[in-house]
Length: 151
Image (cartoon, rainbow, N blue to C red; front, side, top):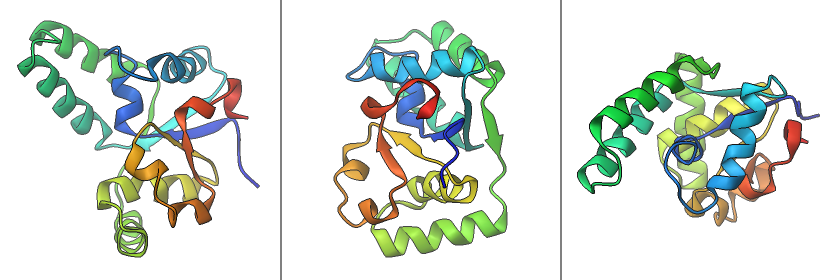
């Protein structure tokens, strides 16, 4: 049974909270539910580094300025995300999932966390969403399918 009150999100969903991109509107529904206390949003703690790296790329392209990127990252760190340490057991599960399903260890860590929490992991990453093998886990969901409260 999946816990619909809590969800896992990956970095590409969180970046869409700040930078207007395809599916930002869907990602913002999830962010609003987090801010309103409707849903708990979980991620491995390296999410902030992945988001910071994405912001760096947007700064280099002139889409974000450094001040906005820094302020946004600071706000993300304070918005109530439940960030999880990457313990050895999560790293081992991530490695296994990575090898079994042909995804990066980083992507697998989000999936492993969702499996541990018995919930869904929302993403807008086409590689994950189009991975036929991953579909058997019934854990990875398209952020466009998110509905209020994660139901």
